Image (tube, rainbow, N blue to C red; front, side):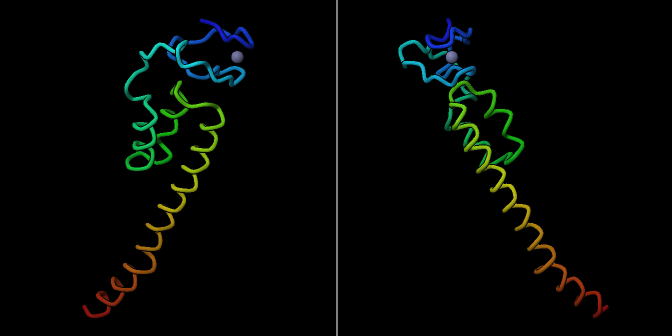
Length: 106
Ligand SMILES: [Zn+2]
């Protein structure tokens, strides 16, 4: 199978040309894509499990357009930053003062 626009060779399950980004008509895409490339699974994996480590799955998936990959990647970087900040906040602002108080009592 090749892209109707740029004639780049495509994998059979592609929904977008990974060369020029053209969205392919649904009937040309054979639905044989691996289950873990399903958009719902990729997004759940990123936001519930792996955060920034889920990005390779997103970029390998033929089910996202190049624009969607960039947008989801940006959201993931921001999301991961928020999680790191929350962990820092929990440890430095909430846990450490208690820990120091406990240490002074002993
Ligand atoms: Zn193309």
